[in-house]
Image 1: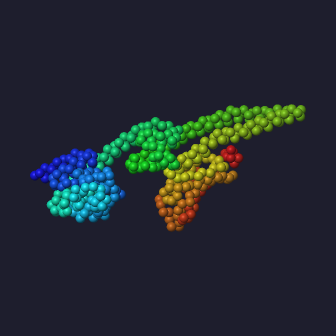
Image 2: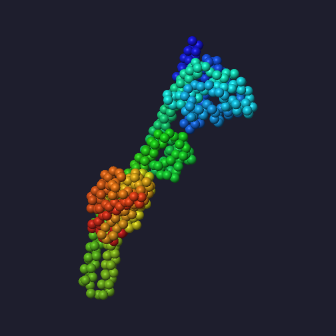
Length: 463
């Protein structure tokens, strides 16, 4: 009855405990009282094989000296059996290696402890630690003693697992509370907020330091150098939200660029309808006046003024063309570079000839480049894409190159062809042609050929 009463008290303590150390120490003490044993200690062993002394009771001086160094450091036979998967039930240890070291090193009194019983601690099927118990002069434990100790070992393992799950959920709840506060702050930032501002917000919200964050990567691909401070789950959520925030920044910036483009187009329209018409009328009147004059010096003067007006008209037309077209080119380049950053692809974009596109063309070219970048990311085995924009008197060309794996088109395309068909259809939609060139281990090249923009001279495109 005393044993049953003690087991009930131990079970109650184990069920009510919320901290491993404070829970196990009284349970271990009660266990020694019930079994008439003198000393005991409990190790928890992690997946890497490192052990932690989480409870001990009535240990001899030899094991507690130097702050318990012999128990806290190094290996032993019982731990080795545990790690090798050989410790599946309570067993008698012939001799304790740690006690032998204590005797050899003359660390103090061992209270005549030489042997101990070793009991594996399991949480379900998962082994998580060891319970060792000993008594002076006791070199063998009977089968019924080992069975009782093994039963208690299972109770301890179940309780430890429950506490660990409780601690994990408490930590998880705390992290989500921090994440909620961070997201509220994140959505108050503007699209002009720099990556440094975002990093400072991260450091403040999650109690990090500058050394915890890798600033060599874009913020949406942020790396944490001390991963133990934040769970993998939280790090994944943070990266997702940072990517969404950067995309929101991009869209807000695009919205402003579109607004600026509309303002440019309105200004170009006003210049065309007002100043351009006035200069053209002035030019005609000067020519007419010159034809009616007979004095050479006056005719030369008027001719000079007419030339100045002609030059002003030419420059005005160039300004109008740039105002109508500049924004589209700038916006497309920024979109492509930002998308590359978003998916983790380094994009080198060359547009030295200032190739321009209409609004519809810009949209389709962007989607084509986006699909090509996605294919590189998923299939090419490289993180770099080169994009070249060229033009001549007859056509404009967009070339997208990666130096990745490539593939043999004669053996079929090794991934979903919907995206490739989409590239060709988008090119056709803007009166273009898309051509794919690839060879195994020699990369992939897309060439998008578009006709010259109607209503524009080659010279005006070069402005």
